[in-house]
Amino acid sequence: MNENQELQRGLKNRHIQMIAIGGAIGTGLFLGSGSTIAVAGPAVILSYAITGLFVFLIMRSLGEMTVHSPVTGSFSTYSNRYLGTFAGFFTGWNYWLVSILVCIVETLALTAYTKLWFPNLPDVVAALFYFVLVVVVNVVTVKAYGEIEFWAAIIKVTAICAMIAFGLVIIFFGFGNGGTAVGLGNLYEQGGFLPNGFKGIMFSMVPILFSFGGIELVGITAAEADDPGKTIPKAINQLIARILIFYIGSMFVLTALYPWNQINAEGTLEGSPFVLTFLKMGIGPAAGIMNFVVLTAALSAFNSMFYASTRMMIGLVHQGNAPKALEKITGNGIPIYCVAISAVLVFIGILGLFLTPALSYFLKLMNIVTGTLITNWTMILITQNSFRKKIGPSEVEKLKYKMPFYPLSNYVTIAFLLLVVLLMAVGGGQAEVFIFTAAWWIIISIIYYISKSAKGKKTV
Image 1 (cartoon, rainbow, N blue to C red):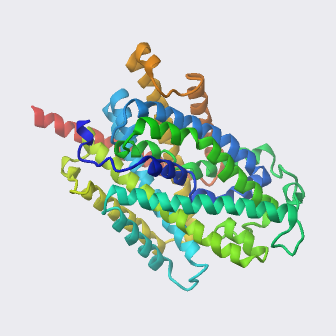
Image 2: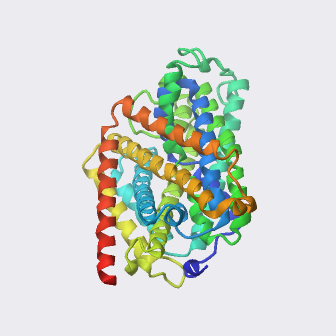
């Protein structure tokens, strides 16, 4: 494909599979789960199961288009093709912003994890260290990025499976807890399994959506995958298993091991609930190991989303929705100007640590990311509807990878995302999300119409 010739197809099947797994395990789970548990209690297990189902459908929607035509820019390019140039422009730049914001969120998480080992190290110093490390990785080669993500994901997967297994042994046999089995009492003794009722389940879906952010990276890697027709469907189909094991399994262990209302009772950005739970139980070595794992996970997510921001930008260049001057790609397949711009924005975001308390900054960014992420996921579903209509019934029959139960699954998933937006609106404390999102939409629209007007004058 002409538009992809400058990028290298250096991501093998094993890279894609692990990038998919890595996208499902990040800061939203390891750090954000503390606030999620506080909202839903032990019923957070159900919250992750319900939300995970809809995220799977979103990925199937994206996968259908990706397998049909694996391109740079992923869903932004599809929006550009099947909804129009404004949709492509809007979706691409919106996701680019999401990627930048997530990079900043991951940096905040990394500073929180680092405090366990270096409590006196200033947050900004730790943040800048990780920032430089990620930028260096992203100016090497795409294969280097794939290798790093492959091994980082292996560490995360191995450790979280071991954590779940170790937790189950403590729960049922008391190993590591003085021989006293913890049992399942914590799942129902602190106000019941549904301490905040179904309202708690519903409102916990807002931060849970954030924890699934980044899973769409599978579609973005398609242009650099050596066999996207096989690797993309396999990665998406395994999503259900990953949700069951990593999210539902870990939430079961956490809420069974320790009273849910004490997991993050301090209300600070002090570290991951995965680490704090073991610390509070007096199992220091396990806490130290888990801290290494969650730090690796956050660094991996930072690396992945920084990569995503640069690939989305080069996709926008190919669409004609970003300046042609950004098109330069190095001999090792790196869109260097895109890397530079993303790096500058992330650096500016990190400097916000000088101005705002870490917890407040983290929560505000997390909420804003959730709002913009919902926008992009909704656009994926709307684009898939248009995609089906544009290619026609005969071509639809030939699709090798289809979204199940279409069109009902598509409409129900859109309704679910709209429900989450409604919950954000009535839940309170989300005013900055709607103000920021509205302002960003206006800015994107103005820039689009100014650029369109300028192009029109050049052709006259």
